[in-house]
Length: 379
Ligand SMILES: Nc1ncnc2c1ncn2[C@@H]1O[C@H](COP(=O)(O)OP(=O)(O)OP(=O)(O)O)[C@@H](O)[C@H]1O
Image (cartoon, rainbow, N blue to C red; front, side, top):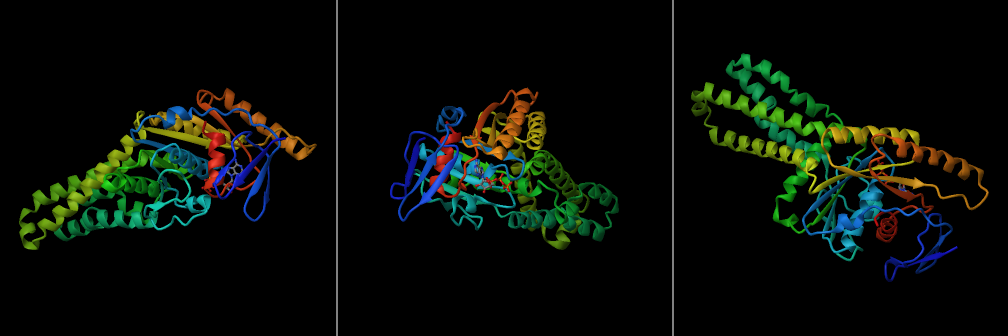
C-alpha cells in the first residue's frame, strides 16, 4: 500500500505510485492520499499531444456527467505545466469550469487560472450574451428586419423565400447546439485578436452529446441561412435602388452586411476547425455503462461521418478491483468490465485509443487535484 502526499506549500502531489482508491486526510497545512491499488496503465499518447508549438485544439465531449469538465480541465493544467500557454474554454451552457478549478472564472472574459507553472487562462462563454449579439446582427440585417422591410416595400414575392430561413424561429426557440455554435464562433472571433495569439493549446469543454451532434450540422445550416439572407439583401438592393436614396441608409446597411458576412465567415471557420486533422481532435469521454458506451458509439459514428478527427476515448470512473470484501463494489466492477468488453468489440469504438481513468474517492476540484488526475490520464 503506497502513500501519496500533497503539500499546499509546493502545490503538488509527490510523484511515485498513482492511486485508484483514495483516502484523504486533511490537516492544517497538508493532506495525504492513501493508495490502495495500482491502476491499469493508461496510455494516452500525451507526448504526441504536447509536441510542437503549432496551435492545437482539443474538444472534449460526451454524455452528461461522465467527467468531461474534469478531463478537459486536467488536460489544460497538464499542457500548461508542460510549457504551453493554454486556454480552456467552456461552451457548455451549464458551465462547470469554475467549480472544477474552484476559482471564479465567470464573466465571459479571459480569466487567469492560479496554480499551473505556465499561463493558463479560462473562458466561460456566456451563451445568452453571444446569442443576443447574434440576434442583433441577424435581425438588424436579415431576420425580421428584412421581413419588415420587404413587407413595407411590397416585395411580397421574396417573403416566401425568407420563410425558408426560419431564422427568427431559430432564435426564439434555439435548438440544442445553437448556443454551442455561436459560442465557438465567438471563440474564433476572439482568436483572431492579438490578445489570444499567445495560446498554443486550446481545450474546449463542450456540452453533452446531443448538443454536439446538432452543433456539427449547424455551421452548415447557419452558413446557408446567412448566405440566403445576404442574397436576399442583394436582390432587395438592386430591385429598390431608388429606395436607398429615400432612406439614406446605405452606409448603415452596408456596415450591417459586412458584419453578417463576417459572421458567415466565422461559421465557415467553425466548420473547418472541426475537420482539420492537423490541428484539431475531438476526444470522447465516457463511463463504463452500457448506456454511456452506446451513446459514445453513436457519437463516434456521427463525428466520423462529419469528418471530425477522433482518436481517443477516455473511459472514466472505472472502479478498481475490490481490495475489501465489498459485494456492491465487486458487482459494480463486474458490470463495468462488461461495458469495457463492449467497447473492445464495438465497431466504432474499438479502433480508438482507449484511456482508462479510475474512479477516485475524492472530488476532483482545484488545480492540485486536477494536476493529480491529469497525471493519471494524460501520459
Ligand atoms: N474519475 C473520477 N473520479 C471521481 N470523481 C470524478 C471522476 N471524474 C469526474 N468526477 C466527478 O464527477 C462529477 C462530474 O464531473 P464533471 O463535471 O467533470 O462531468 P461533466 O461530464 O463535465 O458533467 P456535465 O455534463 O454536467 O457538465 C464531478 O463532481 C467530478 O469531480
